[in-house]
Image 1 (cartoon, rainbow, N blue to C red):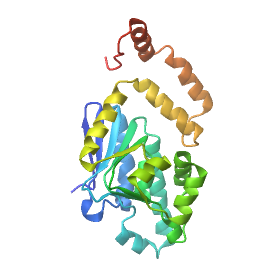
Image 2 (spheres, rainbow, N blue to C red):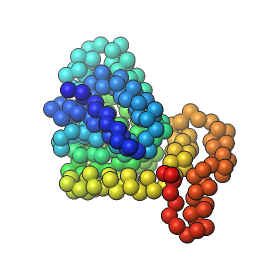
Image 3 (tube, rainbow, N blue to C red):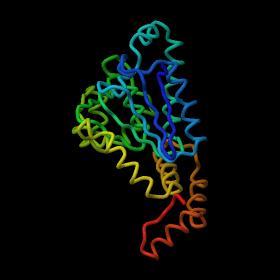
Image 4 (spheres, one colour):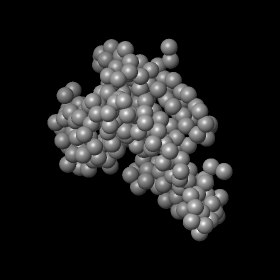
Length: 257
């Protein structure tokens, strides 16, 4: 059984964390595999990637406890594992595709790191969120801490990290940690609705906007000069031609022609 399963259908790719019996915890092999699968997504030229998990108990409970227990006695192996985690999350954050985390259950530690690396987060109401390195005498990585800070601000980030505070889905919405929450049985429908709204707009605009925001948040290595060139090139692009024509003709734009 594949612990990570990728399905591509038209404009949408679906990446499933398929380890419900382990609360969808990530082991090192999964962290190493994730960038490879994301590369497949980029090559497929899809518009949207949905990251979901099997079962209803956990989106991702973080690290595999059995594997982590062994690593705690081997600092070199632990350092290598942390590097794989950072590389995987960075690949997700910079993927040139709009990404959605569909969260159905516990979203903890590295699992929340995955969700924060996505562009949108929709959660079932029974989901729980926490980041608990302070319970282990550890720090959250700089990259993860920055993503958290960008989402919730300084005061809320301190609450979550220093207090190891656990949030329910509605609290996570109020913190700005996730975009919205809904009943568990509505999660798929809400994700589909978001996909429909995203597909109605320009992919060129969305990816350029993502790169620009990632640059401003310190996420993306693309330079400001490169982004300014993309801004100017958009005026000569097919999507602007269609969007401006649709505006003048008072009709919905069709960016998928």
